[in-house]
Amino acid sequence: MPEGPSLIIFKEDLQRFVGQKVLEISGNSKIDQQRLVGKKIKEIKTWGKHMLWCFDDFTIRIHFLMFGTYYINSSKDRIPRLSIKFQTDSLNLYAAAVKMIEEPLDEIYDWEADILSNRWDPKAARKKLKLIPGTMVTDALLDQTIFSGVGNIIKNEVLYRIKVHPESLVGALPLKKLNEMIKEASGYSYEFLAWKREFVLRKNWQVHTKKTCPRDETKIAKEYLGKTNRRTFFCPACQKKYE
Image (cartoon, rainbow, N blue to C red; front, top):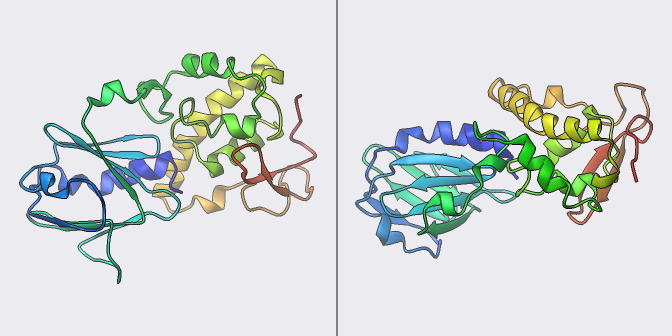
């Protein structure tokens, strides 16, 4: 599943379509496709893992789920979710969730929760975390209402950086560790974005998919933890469990 930083790159890649008129559209998406014909994309935004194509009076939300992808001026050998022909280019979306939004985006999205937004508010995140003291940090970091854009890789790397065991409870974290988690959720995401642009992201992973801890050479544990039951990599020696 693409994480917030990857969506930023997707948005940049698709900027060529801003201002272009939709000439033809097809695919197996259940939205009112013909409503897009003749319309121009005014702006492309992101909120966490959501890509938002803004038209005059509605927005198309794209969620790439686990295996969603897109092709510009090319296609795969199967029916796309959406196939759009613009004035100078074509775009094909596959394995993505597509939804039409009628309401103003400010009524739906909390921009202060987006870890890569210039409106990101760590104080708001701290306030929300204090309302869920019994939640494991492995679940809290994946809560998109608190950390919009954080995915499994970012979660694993952030907890490793701050030396916190993924099964630690939010309410048991010392204030210093809580603040570190909030700070690194956004800070690491910007590093992720930079590494992704330079094609060196995997080289910079410290714990995700790794076998040995680079800090103390302990064997890395791999488990499926929390209510989210996501694949979690951690060092049982240097990541302290707070409960």
